[in-house]
Image (cartoon, rainbow, N blue to C red):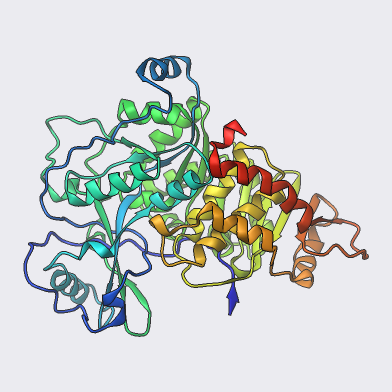
Length: 483
């Protein structure tokens, strides 16, 4: 069965209590096939792991030059040598096979989690998650990438730092270190995402955040100087709605304000959290509104766009977000199996999805964002940007899970060369015809057939791919900026 992979991350945070290194977990099913292999990895949670001293040798390492002198020159000159930095949402994903998913009643759910957390998971179930997905996908496209966030001083933090380091991604501690912070407390530890899979392949997410009104890192009040430097040196800073689960609205807004001050473009994907933030605390609502108005690029699924605007038509919803924005240049609507739409003040661009054998959609939305960053930085034609983004998302969906399992550039190139897109001309014409009189409209098409729709410009897939391949092939062996 063919399906589309350019999807948003649709998972929830799940957080667990501290657990000792004790007996095998009675909830796990050792006989299940899922318990005997690596799983597909999902979303974000937090948990206290084994106490292990960790040297954060990778933290605050932002040198892309050949030495410290060059690095200092770049800092003082204000050069933007980082293509994209992610803001918060760093975690380790863990997927476990269970006989039954967590119950819905809050008290029963808590008991379930306490039972599950009695023994630590085997390392074979660990994977980098959250914004690591986007960071890894972007690095594989040849971009210079940094992550600005928090990981704890324990075994999970070491694992996460090593994964990012091996992918060529720089890591920066978001908070100033000082003696007032109790680094041994649970609140300081690396976030873990626990994803529970039952025998019917259904997924459940549990979190100790379900029992707390505070963000995971509510103790974090100010951006570190290194975090500010990373934002200043970045062309783009990316934040998603899950950041609100770990960082205070005040801190998120301060990062946004600083990015605007230093001329860094802001990408924001509210994700599934957008709907709950609309009815959240006054501080959350205010922060969400500011991100929606002050971001340069907004990325949403059609369902998320509708929940934020009350408008079912994805193009009308995108245009509304553009009008209400102060700095907004692009609104990108992810249309699931249909493809994606990029809306500006003067144009609408659409690209059908690639046909792939879908295995796992986790990480597809994050990978999609990475390719949008690629197109934005290199000023590619809008429909070209969507084509690459759909390809990266689709390539990720052909594998199992996120983190180090997101799309490789080789896989993306193979998809583009195959040019097997899910054309549905009647769908796109019906969706776009009511907007035919106002804007330039472009649709990626495998075959360009002369017809009556003079208002619709069709971009031949063959032409798009022939121009994309040299740029992407160059990124296989060089940093994109050198090509």
